Length: 234
Ligand SMILES: [Zn+2]
Image (cartoon, rainbow, N blue to C red; front, side):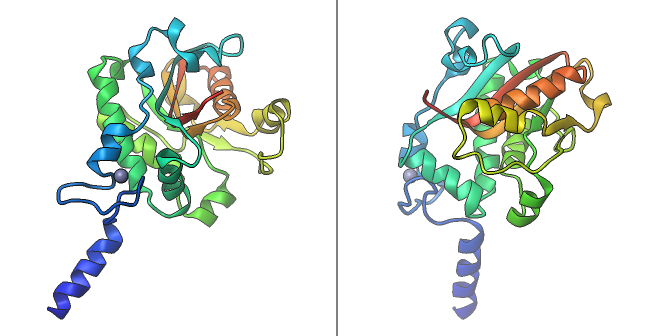
């Protein structure tokens, strides 16, 4: 029995026993999210809208030609989505990115747009931040999307060139300047002539994704789309 207890403790460490969004205990057969949260998350369903009616796509108008602007859910402060993303980013629950990516990827495939993407590329973390955190939360989402859509992904196509200061106290223009020159294409052959889906965990101003898209287009990507787990309301 001792072994059994030790084993279930061990398994409990690997597979969280409470919902990562609401912290209620998980029932048998539920993984990561309880059924209630899974049905009640604030899904955007932007992939079902024409581009002209997609509020996220509008944020990029006049800046860069973004083919699809997609986000799985809406980011609501102090809500379940914020808790979920906090678990992914700071609490080592990297698998939730994989799970959400798979679910969302399957939906995009069902909508018939998965085959439009040639390569999925996560927004890279600065190497120092990566070393500190141990993983890039956007990598797991990219990998999940790749599995859900049966498309390739690459964590090495883009790289950061400089360390960015904390963006929290900067306004939009300053943020843009701050990130505009910090991304570069590391593997040009992998992206030339391709439709690249750039992915991140959260879209707030969109400046980071814009900077990545600009770097990809400048290096010869044919088209760029963006997808995040969550997007903040404007
Ligand atoms: Zn829940």
